[in-house]
Length: 281
Image 1 (tube, rainbow, N blue to C red):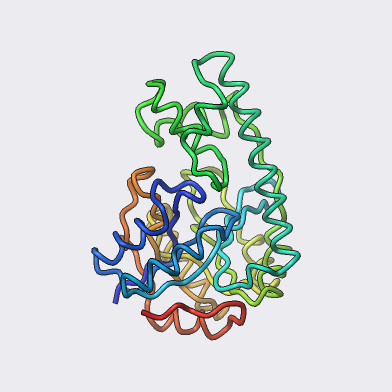
Image 2 (cartoon, one colour):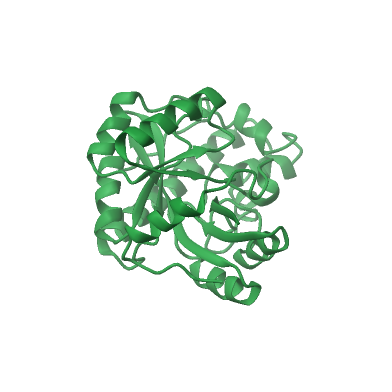
């Protein structure tokens, strides 16, 4: 049974509607799909209808933008109550900050390249969480870079003169908010070193002490040696171990179900949540 717990739709930085995403997953034999758009649950209702029509199970989730000692952290929140006031307010603030940051980066890029704010908005869905991927798509459309990967490796990297950091909440606070919303908190791709600095062991321990529920171990951005260490950490602290694709449609080379989660781990994840139920096939 293929269980892929980390994917994105056009409501954040994926290239597909939730319906198209669910339909593709069903065609590929995915039995359980997790929709985890950045800082939004706007795609949940459409994904529920699509999953019920396609006959696959759906785990409703969200990828919460955080920062630990200046290091970017993505925290996956699963099956939380989307109406929980504090978490909802925090991600709304994150979306506003991301919008301001994106606009500033576009203004900087526009000084050197034929890029406009309007061209970036054209790349995003009406309710999308606007961010760097949409700038990347606009750069591709304008012929400035070849693809998203090239954009993030160069003009949009954290080392670029056009880069603007994103103010976000601490993962320690985010874990508390997720739990208070009845959800489970999983640290996404914790050793994705090619993306930039990763959280040191002391930071991971602090997150565990704050109640972290799991680690996303099997992910293409975690090097093989790091996966071994992460699995040992999870075992030592009784954490869930998940695996997933982090699929973005055509926006990234990641393929649906290229990494998956063990059914036992999904059962454990569902067991610790009380926000919203798993949508059964």
